[in-house]
Image 1: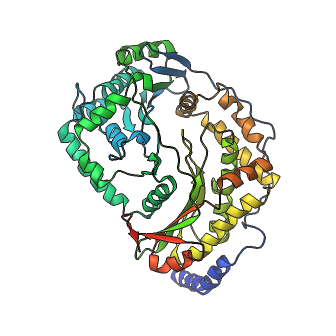
Image 2: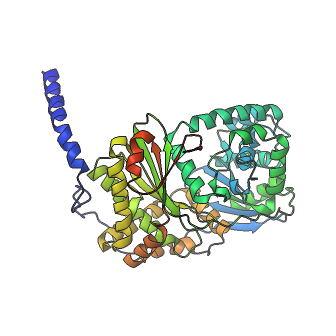
Length: 488
């Protein structure tokens, strides 16, 4: 009987499916979502008042900035060392050097081999890693474990920071892994979309790189790694933060023991080329024959963290596509059924990181998806957001911030941001009020500035034969293959 019922239901669904799809492709006239909002949640209208606990702060004689924040809720400790140099400092002919240097720190020091390092970290149940993300101005070394192992974690962290040897045999193995990883990335539509988007947005600026090249992987040498490390991994170019169940004075003494002999030196002059002027609106097609979906990325320059309108931009982004309550999600997924998700995001760095919207849709609904994306871009620019919708976004952002204060590492990260960007001491104390004061006019002003339709860069990764005629309806199209070669 269960089999008979299941067959009946399947048949009914198949019968209704064409009608349901047709309904999903009709343009909405009124509501974006079928979700009924009862607005019965007990939301306080008062502005959250916070005063973040202040870390103990000092600068060692060698120039290393130290922040220690005591948090005694859990018997753990987290450490983060920020080196103020990253992928933006890569030589033009060697993209990925900052990443290669960070990745190789754990592959051997003057005191330990790669295997010995791994064994020592595992032996105390700790974590220790290093990274330098593409598009970032930072390299980071992070560690965590039980508070009783703080001494050992600091010793291990100082060892890989001060004494890496970049063993040739480990570098050879690392290169093979990187080549395999790059090949894997190039098979992924998401990577192809992001890579093309950053290239067309930033052009000659260092943030254009999304990954190393095969040439840079083959070419990098031990001497390249040593040079980058010796130039930038210096105490007067670093901030070390510690948070957890520790006594600040005791941790400071440990830091002096393990990092006090770190030699400082003059930093090389870094002249970042200015951002290229915004390019005119254009569509870029990355042909991926046989693809059953289209990956869409659209965006333009965003704001720097220190810019006055950064908070207004983040509120605008929250309304447009900052989560499952954003307009893009409600429209393209809930109302139209085109995708599993559609979002937008805002980056932040010392330069104007990108604001972008993205989604992945079935090839057959590429046209409808682009139509709805452009509709939402225009709507956020042309119409002031309703006070109720704005209020919901502001409360969600403040609530998320409030919850983050329960996580020690998030607190440490906030203070590292304050030091890195030279923000006011009370920046995070005033943050909830700053969000609450964003007005509909502020949101519209941010949308008109950053959702710049005249300079929007639109990238679509998919089956060129099927989607190129669709894309041409929305503007001029440049076509590339998966390796970045332009197709005539």
